[in-house]
Length: 185
Image (cartoon, rainbow, N blue to C red; front, side, top):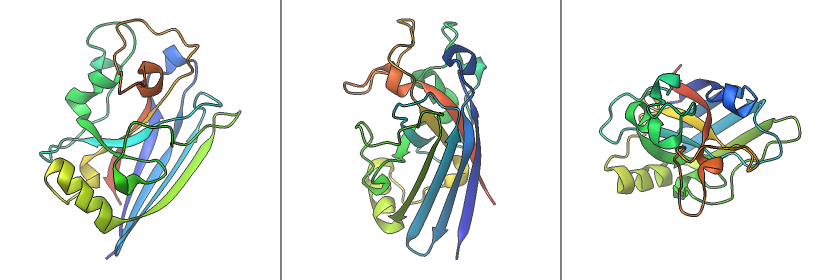
């Protein structure tokens, strides 16, 4: 049975980053395949953009972060501040989502106009097996997840209060710039 999901992706931190990233994501589960398609516009140009779905391992419904999540009042909603409403980073949309390998340099790069289009077809059973190892359940529960797009240029001044260091990647890489709630169609 085929299941289709979609997220309308809206800007987060737009006034601070100087652009209003937006786009759409679709997820189609068909037999043992998950087709992921993401198209983004007006992202910071010429840089790599991490993208993932976030959620709660216990199945709680995740919500998108808004300016209300800026708990330290620095004007930015950073990665750590999203966790209260969106949960943890779960599945990356990189060169091999089924491997669930998150911190690396294999994500889409926006063109000079801030556009990128991403499509991957992944073996659903492999993704589910790795998801179960990480989170205790095979069920991706896509309609309880949110998608985040991350990344701003290194030249953008970020206050020290902006958290988001992951491995050797700093807050410029992990700062959320857009978010969307995934819904079953």
